[in-house]
Amino acid sequence: MGIICLQFQLVACGTLKACRENPFIFQENTIGSSSIILNNSHFLSSASVSCSSNSDSDSIPPPYKTLLPSDLIMSQEEVAKQAIKHALKALKKRHLVEEGAHAPAYIALSRPIISQGSEWKEKAENLEMELQQCYKAQSRLSEQLVVEVAESRALKASLQEKETAMAEMEKEMKQTRDECSRLKADLEEKVRALELVLSEREELKAQLEQLTIRATNAEAENKKLVDRWMLQKMQDAERLNEANALYEDMIERLKASGLEKLAQEQVDGIVRRSEEGAEFFSESTVPSVCKHRINAHEGGCASIMFENDSGRLICGGQDRTIKIWDSSTGSLSQSLFGCLGSVLDLAITHNNRSIIAASSSNNLFVWDINSGRVRHTLTGHTDKVCAVDASKVSSLHVVSAAYDRTIKVWDLQKGYCTNTIMFHSNCNALCFSTDGLTICSGHVDGNLRLWDIQTGKLLSEVAAHSLAITSLSLSRNGNVVLTSSRDNSHNLFDIRSLEVCGTFRTTGSRVASNWSRSCISPDDNYIAAGSADGSIYIWSISKADIVSTLKEHTAPVLCCTWSGLGKPLASADKSGIVCTWT
Image (cartoon, rainbow, N blue to C red; front, side):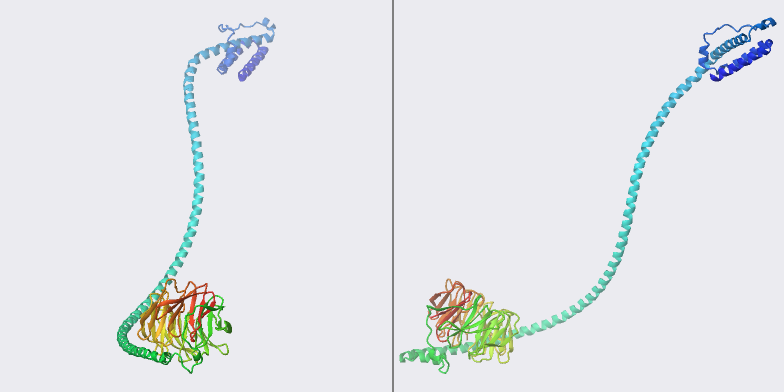
């Protein structure tokens, strides 16, 4: 609009100037200017048209009349204004004509543009929605990409770890293969060694079969010899029985003449006039009174004995000491030291010069009574020594038994073992025969066995008890042996035939330990045995009944012994108390 007005002003100015210079050409110039303006009228805006809508709508004025020189007196300004007015009217009319001619085309053109605009708007909205969806999809894909990148990194790290682990496993597998190869070589070597051992085993098995056959033959031969020996022993027993019958007949005859005691001394050999103390011997009496109560040892006393044909009492205890007492006064005469363990059994040589102690230290100790010093320490057992006895005819030989299932014979002069007897059952008690050639042993399996001291061979055996034998005591004449057992019974066996001569038991009498020692009186008329309740039971052999029960101990009685002079009787218990009875 501004451009059209500017053009219009320029045209108007140009017309006014031309009129001033040559008024006669005003008509032509005006028409030319109108043509120029009309040629540009289609560029006017609707606002310019509306502004000129109230102007005069008459037809184009007729051509101006030719001005006369007299009319030149009119002011140039009025001429210009008239020209402008005529030009404006022409332009308005031309504009209206052209607008009416172009209106249908404008409407026709505007309709498709509006419809296309709504479609374009709808398409733009659809495209905008698609763009938003694309943005959302892009966001999701970005998040997924981030997650996948993180997972990829984690997988990469895991892959590296697994590659490292795989390398280590390959290294370990290589080492394992090397170890397997080495073990395979060792296995082959051991298989060869095993084959060698198996071949040796087959050879040893063949040798064992041969030895088994030889042993079977030897057992059969040994059985024949034992049968022959038993037959011989039976014959000897018959002869001895005949001798005993003759002896009894002689005793009956001597009773009339008053010489019974002398005959008994001569036949049994109990008293020899040449022996020291023989003048003090008298028949054993049944004890009833506790003469002395001695606190002998600390921790218990397991073994007591009297010197041969003497009143001196010897005891050994858990305090590893051996003490010698005067039984008539109850005073301590001597103490022996040097034992390395508890004293489990005692023995004395027949000449009363040496005392032998069996110890829990697996050794035996030999003291010289006069000097009180240890003469020998006998070593060789591998377990505690529980029984010992000295020969009744020689002061050189001692026999011992231990829980290593061995019985050993010792030479006291040389101080070493001369023979070893091995057996499957432990021995709890043993003693020498009166001739010193046979050993009697009582075992845990309840059997009484006789052994040859020279050869170590088993001479005979008998099932004496149902439980372990705890004590053996040989009679003074050597014909009878007393056995005590954990089955709380006491049996007398004829040592020649191993037949039971008597069985002694009573209610309340219970053996206190595996090494409880019982005894026979010197005149072979009584049996004394201690009990777990602290009592001492005395049986008469001839009556097979209890004649006395002694009660002084408060602890289980472990051992009893009778003086060779006939009295007193001594007993010891687990608390170390020793009592003498008269």
